[in-house]
Figure 1: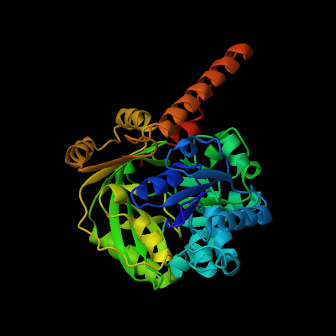
Figure 2: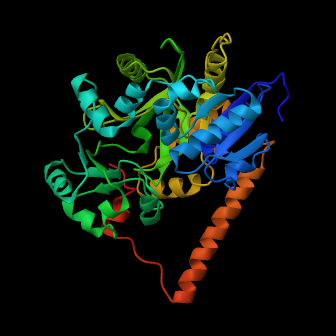
Figure 3: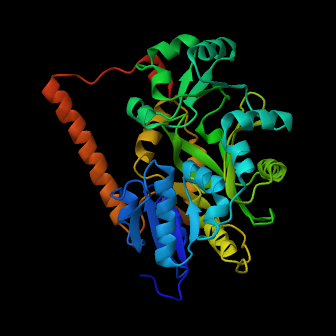
Amino acid sequence: MPQPDRAVVLVAGAESPTGLGVARALRDEGLTLVGLAADVTASPCRSALWHEIVHDGGDDTGARLAAIRAAAARYGRPVLVPVRDDVVELVAAHADELRTVVDFVMPTADVVTTLLDKTAFHSWAVDHGFPVPHTEIVADQAALDAALARVPYPAVIKPFERTPEWQAASPRHKAYRLESAADVDRLGFRLLDAAPRFVVQQWIPGTDADVWFCLVYRDRTGREVASQVGRKLVQWPVGTGSTALATTAADDDLHTLTRDLLDAAGHVGIGSLEVKRSTADGRLYITEPTVGRPNLQSNIATAAGVNLTVLQVRDALGLDLPPVLAPRPAVWIHETTILRALAVAASRRALDVRALVAALRGAKGRMAAFAAPADRAPLTAELRRLGGKAAGSVQRRVRRGQALPAPSPATARASAEG
């Protein structure tokens, strides 16, 4: 049980590197950290920072709400920090009920829907004059065919949400780059069997190093308390994946765009905006906002000395917010994907070596997805998991007498740079 004089933080999504990042951002705050996890055996759950890991209730809404209430009853009104979109949606939809047992700072349900729902966000952004690429949302074969006929190529197609069926059909790729409509037929699975809705979007010319983001914390009144701009240097898979390595940066245009967009939406709490700077016209194009939660690379702000998570928790507790110091140069690394990402990006001449060297040499702060000097168990567990997964895949293919399949043209291009 927690000490009576210690505040408790309930991290919903503790099974993810993002959840682990929240725990590490709070490690020196004298808090009791409790994780709600979809998979209590996941590598991030092995961290010694957790006081306890409990199951989050699974896919059933009632069970998930019950899990939060049970944790609140046991620990005495914790601060709730969601780190997954589905948890953000759950909390927003049941905010009045949950506020009776937990504290949190998060946008209202209408703001969450506007910014998180890709259909609603694209229409809203266009109406408000924010720069978004040509985007279409499809939910059936006729709409998909029509969108593929209209969208400018190259294009990107990605599921509205990564369902379990999508994860099974496409475990590595969260999106695919298409050179033509015919590439959809070469993916190796039927898209609409893997997810009910898809985003078909114009490709923005550029490499991973042209992807930028702005992380912010806005207090319960909507006032921006702190921000940190960052730049991805490489993603995995290259071109369409998640951050493998990012560095702090400065970009007044991006900061202004982020502030203006979140002001217009009425966003409060922690969030961010990701954009890509087109190498064709130099403009910033919004790829997606992150709403009411941290994301994978949010701890680059922590490494820079701008701890957005501490601000979030203190604000939820009604405490004074500490002054925000000038940031220091920092990098954030996903250590289990970085080597593959660098190798592929270099082979495609899509790696900004000068920016990479400058970032690594100049970094005064460093954080990683799994590794930490005094908390090695998550990385060890993740390496064992990946090693077992790779060995199991090879053994299955050997038993079946199969060779590794050659990637289809569309799959090979899924990670290509613009």
